[in-house]
Length: 198
Image 1 (cartoon, rainbow, N blue to C red):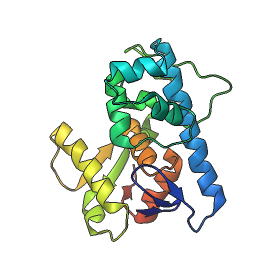
Image 2: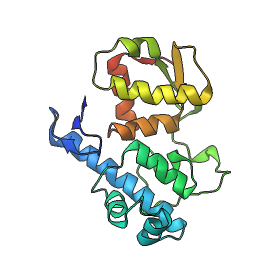
Image 3: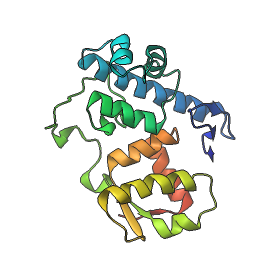
Image 4: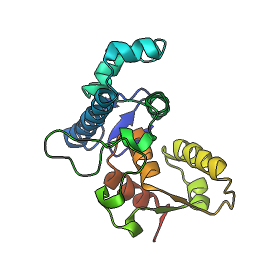
């Protein structure tokens, strides 16, 4: 799979693309921020790396989870979803905000988190995807995007087949899958011509 940040393998390894080190550095910085979030949530759950390994029956090895938390290894979306289920939190809580926090980030794991922490206005929270245009694409991102969006359609039982509106947490998950920031993913969707105006 090729994107603006280069060639990505499913396990998250990044090979240099035409943009060179700048985008690779951005991807690594984002992986580090994801790792910081994973560590913060694990600590709020009062679990050590070994506790997670044991409680997950070694699904999440301490050494691998530690590499995710240090940003040395990118976590795939399916594993991120399984880890969110293990921690019993929504998957978007495992992803960093679009603005890096000053110092250590405190994450509220309560169900009643107020919307005041949101960075974007309400009309920026949702992205409309032209599914018909996506089907016609000849781009390497197409198949992964189609599969992810199809999963959303199945969950919502929304099968109109023309337009799908995705939420901020979906955008973050897709951005993580392509090792992009949410803003970079918005630009890429615009470049591909599949993002519709709000």
